[in-house]
Length: 283
Length: 329
Ligand SMILES: Nc1ncnc2c1ncn2[C@@H]1O[C@H](COP(=O)(O)OP(=O)(O)O)[C@@H](O)[C@H]1O
Ligand SMILES: [Mg+2]
Image 1 (spheres, rainbow over the protein chains, first blue to last red):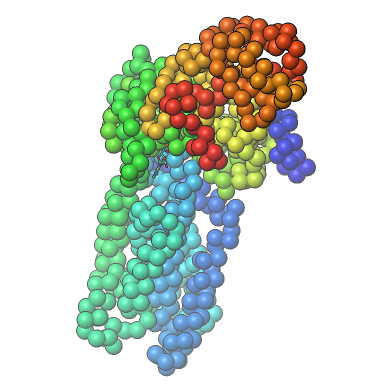
Image 2: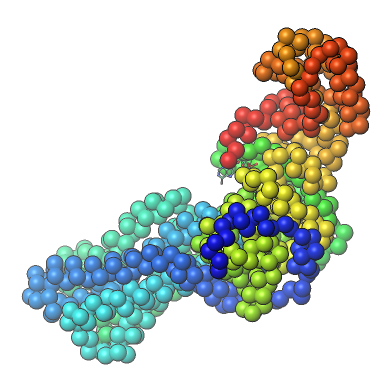
């Protein structure tokens, strides 16, 4: 690309020609409407391009998880489990879940700012499967979740995390986390569409995420908590997810918590996917 | 969902849309025949964007109904979407992406395979004079280039109806002319265009029919000629050499034009509205000019202009549009 040509140079050159315009206006055969999957993947490609053009947005999936892991390992490690290294075996799957689930809120914030710009108006006038713009956007976010999980895994391995489940167990754990996070993202697309500003989306996200991640089995075993708290922790989907991931990463998969993880995931997609699309169609 | 070959491009009846206490649309009726440019003319806040959004299936009306080529915009939204495209008032392309990426994205979403989408993107970029800017992010484009990439995205699959919401607001005169030429080509090809604008001269140049919108209502509609003659065809502006001759000039003009002549704030200027057809107006204006000369009044500048949107508004509603126009971006 020539860097010498500025926008004003280009404008002096351009004279719309009826012939050239007429030629591009000639209706070729219209291709058939793309499948739901294909249009979702295309929107996912848009999310990739945005990461390519605005790489700063990867900061929150790299720096934030590293800080979280280091901070909690050394802050609580000694006090809770005696040594940071022993604590890490228990704690790393939990901090992975906390970080990635926290990152899901950027889906809502991203959608909220995106939709303020006119481009969503164009998407909504295209004859495509309606949820695909949002599904594709979340596909892009899933890539970010995977990246964050791998960063945390890397930090963990450096600090001394040695999962008994091996490569398969770790990958299965990350897989569970990605499935759950994909489903959980629909909570934020709904808020991203309902709430007026980026700030309020952020506020609501914090209000939901803090209790959900902290009142769970991420940091300490629930048996050390008072009974009423244990009751909440037991039904918290984050607890099931952390149990499931710990079990597969340690090489002894726990069918119950894995089942709960899938049930919760399905529930989030159905309920919040529906509410999101209801809002999306009526905006 | 059968097609209606003889259906008008747009038929709206009593469209209502409220936002809290604001009645953005307060019973809009429109009948847009296929195959021409239809202008929606109105000041900022008149309800033009809301009307376009309802017709493009982006917003549901609270009352009334509308069809696009015979398809109801609420009940048959996807049939409508297959026939229309929209270029919004603000950029309806992704500003973070490059020009070519935007066009490939839309092409893929319309069902083109990757190579076909790329070829189509290149072809459109060339026709819109954007080949050199293809790999630059749209946020780095000038205003005119943004408009062009936006319109290019809208005609990726040539639509039967194209919505253009204030496509030239904020553009310099040259870019405005480019957009006008593009619109003319699009219409020549058979696409119907619904154009919103705040400028009477733009609607006059491009539209074969105009609806004047104010406070969510159509307050007048017709051909540009009908509208102009309904309010007097133009305005005569005179600038005198000597402010002392103004009272005399005012008398001479009033007699020659048979119309009220207003002194302007500028002490050497006068303005008069002329009634009748363009031809009558220009003969009257010519007579007035010679009578001024005969009376020995030196005229530095004399012009016969179209009524401004402000004058159209004043004539149609008894309230000026300028207060609202000042807030226009
Ligand atoms: N989403 C919205 N929420 C609240 N008020 C709105 C919204 N959209 C438009 N309005 C109001 O409706 C009126 C018409 O707006 P609009 O259709 O944008 O006018 P125009 O395009 O002619 O400038 C204005 O008073 C505007 O403030
Ligand atoms: Mg507008």
